[in-house]
Image (tube, rainbow, N blue to C red; front, side, top):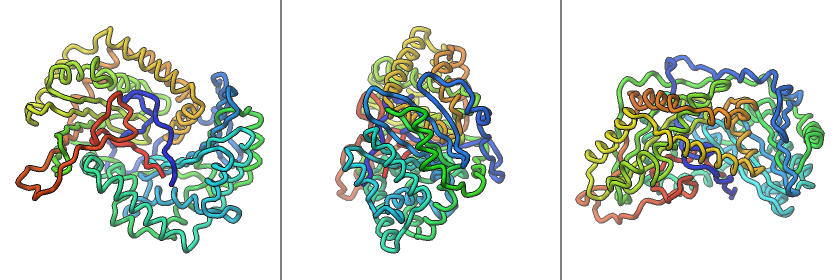
Length: 505
């Protein structure tokens, strides 16, 4: 079983994309639109880099970032493929995650499971995870073992073998994973329903792990075709972080990854786009396992675009202002501290290939019905739109954001994740470098304008997850909602917190 990726070290509004990546667009539904390449890509090798960061691209197209950190003799290798669940063909949902599992089944040189066993035997750990927009693999190990893990990772990039005895057994594993993580969890099922309503046409509307009936039909041939089409050095990003120099990194990358030929030209990521949403949408789901009503409202909005991250930065700050704290945020003060809610949250996930979502969540007090709870939320938002952000609150939030970023980037593994996820979702290295300064430059006017555009939008989905009425339960036992293990809030959140946009192992 593959282990979990590093937990995000930021508050809810700043997590490295570990919550729901729902996205849409304003392009015509019948005309897929590729995301433009970052403007800085051609000059990336010569652009000024922060101290300790270097960047180069091999002749076969493998983009590489090296992050020096010599405080401990440890190194992290991450390989990010720019392909995920949103790139799957209709009817083949789950193939990206299924292939992630099969990548541990060996090569001509490696027996099934040998890579993970070798990493563990050498005192390290490894992992893999799948998103809508990428699939990533990593190892953390002593720096003198870096050549070993680079050789093994390069081997499976080029020489994966999927045996006749492997594919059916692994398909059953991912089906059981879906049963445990989704089908048995009302919060996860609710997220699936909300995403499907949010995205009528865009593939962000289907689950990363896949729809069960389509997963059951996945074959060895499907997995091989996916691997052959997308697992290529020119569709990947290599991140090396820790006790390694740029010279060592380049030499090793050229030795192990350099001989792997690109499988043709990297194709633009053509996806069906979401047509304009002209009216708000609503969904209500009842489940006997739910003990507390939960409201989630999500808004379609922009992602972090290459070369233009100003609006995304304002939305990041807005999320922290509205719901980053139960005690000091706007919704915390107006709903939680007044007794109207027992939990509130705001979350914006800006790291995605296509337009994304901004979500507001609320668990109302026991004596507040759904209509009154929704009215209380609307009133709090209307008051914020009228007054705009308080200057002291804005500075406090920006200080907290800066502190969280410093803490997160103090870890070589956290920085590797930061650059890997950014590049895998279409940003340039320069975009990742510039992000802290762009956030620091956000003004009250920026936040107020972003809030007006967002909260006045009709592109919303308002969803309620409710306990099933007693007369309909037929004796079913009711259990409290389960808090997700990777929730990045300062308190345990209900299962209806916006979901991780990564499926781990």
